[in-house]
Image 1 (spheres, each protein chain N blue to C red):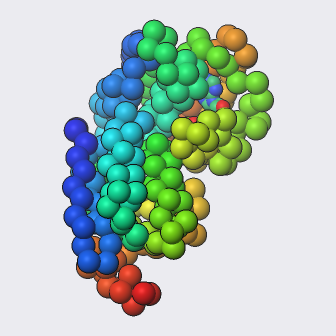
Image 2 (cartoon, each protein chain N blue to C red; image 1 turned 135 degrees about the vertical axis):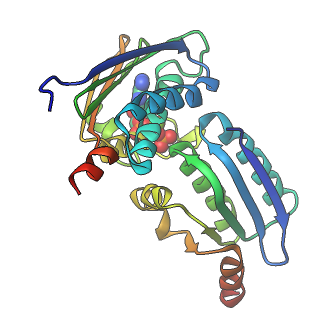
Length: 117
Length: 153
Ligand SMILES: Nc1ncnc2c1ncn2[C@@H]1O[C@H](COP(=O)(O)OP(=O)(O)OP(=O)(O)O)[C@@H](O)[C@H]1O
Ligand SMILES: [Mg+2]
């Protein structure tokens, strides 16, 4: 399945909605799109919405960690939401939840960021 | 019940292009579907094939498009065995390569989790590699078929 990225600049965060399969082949596109939004458009916090992500491997972990470092350096935070059970296992294995918060939905993710700000 | 064990086998060979990562994992998953795996098991299989094939392309052939990646899968009873092989660079220190978070290519934003994921998702994993010769990853997993679960429940 093809890979699609939808970006929405919300008041408190850049919402990144992923659809399809995120692997080594598609990771570069995600990296470029997010880097652009973070560097040029100044996004600080990021909400990664994974409801329609059907596949992800370690290449996805790498891009997510890379973008986390980018926003963390500016004091930003990252929240992932709608994470499927098999992806939860992948995130747990890599220790990603030590730095990135998980939320059940986009709304909950945005609400969590409001409180923390 | 028949005493004979069901056997089947497949081999895929393709050039080291990142386009083939999804092709390889989907093909192996379709092959393994004969055992009626659960969705979780199928996702595990797809993930480990993706990890091993990506490693062959990124590390084995270092992004060169003219390498050959071979993927073999066999079914023997309830066990799936998968092999992913390249004739690329090879691994100098296999113990180090297996460590969680170890990567020789941090500049490419690799997380160093590929082998850890493979070892977690499969029942058996073996890495055979020699510098300059290439790398062979052998993996095995027993599939708890849904059909069988339903039969015995
Ligand atoms: N096929 C291969 N040929 C040569 N070296 C390899 C191969 N597979 C793995 N390696 C070496 O083993 C290391 C660890 O591999 P692993 O898949 O765990 O992490 P990674 O590929 O670096 O990062 P990630 O898989 O998280 O993107 C690699 O960095 C590389 O040095
Ligand atoms: Mg890897």
